[in-house]
Length: 329
Image (cartoon, rainbow, N blue to C red):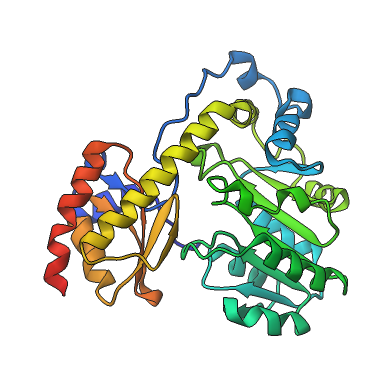
């Protein structure tokens, strides 16, 4: 199992700080609480049914015709390699490590591509995996650039897979409206922007044959009834969505400015997190952790991914915790 952000209980045991006293900035999820309604008792008591309005709400939200609800985009990441036997795969890295892990577990040997290597790499791969915005660096690719790569691959029967888990704050960067095209698969998640990581709900946006093939592999009742209920309401709540986009844009900028003011200017990021590369990243991570603040350490890249505090008390804690950073200079 690969390590991920959000291992708060492990950090509490390791540093001897009670669970309730931590500020978790490690996941990149929106830190606010979505205004959820109580789940009716009958939703818990019945098997999930696809005629409950979730798919309709998702089609309206994403502007896509063919979709498949999955138990978080992670479920799709693990199942997708089974559709591409014998294909040559490239992954734009560094990126969310579960992509490489899934392809390798399925017997593939993916080629690692830097963003500057993609144009040349398209000549000898069949499937390209891209995260946009990238996790963890925040690097963005334009819609036109991605569609150009897709066109090149699709002309040879290839496929572009775009993981858009962090794109909701900037929907203009999404390929969702193009997901009906052959050779294009778009992955979306309700965990990040909606702050509903515990619900485990995501969507595959792709041509109907791809969605059908994945559905057969994932089996019946892939998403629980309560999750479907919560997801349908969240996807239809246009007002809260816009409020959160405005709030995330402001808080993302605030975080970048705060880090820069403490000699930790981000080298990348998006509305939900900032990416800081620093030779002292391990020492900075440890300094935060000793103060009960959990960030996401990427030791191989000498970098930290730092998410957003939820409220003013969290912002104050982070600001105070950044003071000792100058000691590492």
